[in-house]
Image (cartoon, rainbow over all chains, first blue to last red; front, side, top):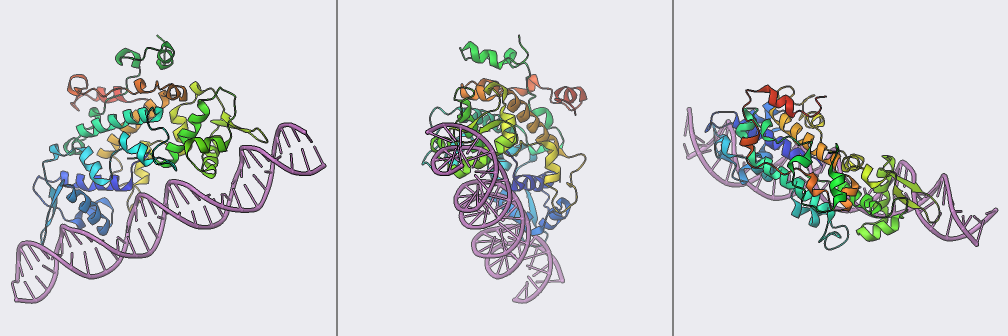
Length: 172
Length: 172
DNA sequence: TGGATACTTGACTTTTTTGTAAGGATTGGG
DNA sequence: CCCAATCCTTACAAAAAAGTCAAGTATCCA
């Protein structure tokens, strides 16, 4: 489970735009120098962001890129989607099908259930975090802490006592 | 952000072992056929799991692989670690440093803070989920739901450093 | 003991991802 | 109106990851 280079670097580029006053343009050379990336690479990353409608470009001399919307209206999820796609449960069974047409676990798949929950979680928190949060260093509190005493807060709809016993980490 | 093929397929292989009675061995060919993977590939995946001490091998005729410990003692985290490593915050700044020696955001990095929190979250839930949970389809309740009304439960202001400290999992 | 079974491991090939290159298109200024 | 600055897009090379192969070693059992 990893973050791709494209996601990390692309996010840095758009963060650079989020830090200047809204409406100001920044050209590729400036971003590249500041972030320690090549001009060609930054061009490609901004191309992806631009295509997704997250940024606007101004061509010609004194041109550059700027956010298409205020930083508080652009979410981390949108950015990551533009740069390669956030993990989704649906994509997994088709992505990992081995030599079969469909995933051998199609239907009642134990793994699918977990990935799907993790994916939902990531999706929600990434939707909640905006570029403004990131720029202000205020995103951290938006990521819910893990509740260590899960049995107190999570309704265990499972009826099997065996699984309920497994879930309890610290005992009752 | 994605799950690698090695992680997904390796997890399926060890899940196959988790479903048979503890102590029984399963040979590579059986796993490969059942999961729709090549024998050679399953050999490699089991090699990784075996090297990490999660499985044991029995050589010779009627040999095969089996879990090294009961399924309730092997966590998803251990498996993913053996297969490629779970996302960790520390690895990011060194992994993505552009053309610099260290990440340009070394020090007060807004992104690092978010990735680090996401990584901690994943680490905790993956530590909590065992192969037994997965085999029984009981893992889903172990993944905490996202609290949609975060403003009611999570202090958003950065004013209180206490919240950040409290959220911090083990501090390191 | 010897053949059959099955794990072990490193090298090799293929595929995907990452990053570069190059030429084209658009704009603004002199 | 021309030129330089800048974005735009595709093609391609390099690197990394994924997946295969094959020659080995260990073990079992007759």
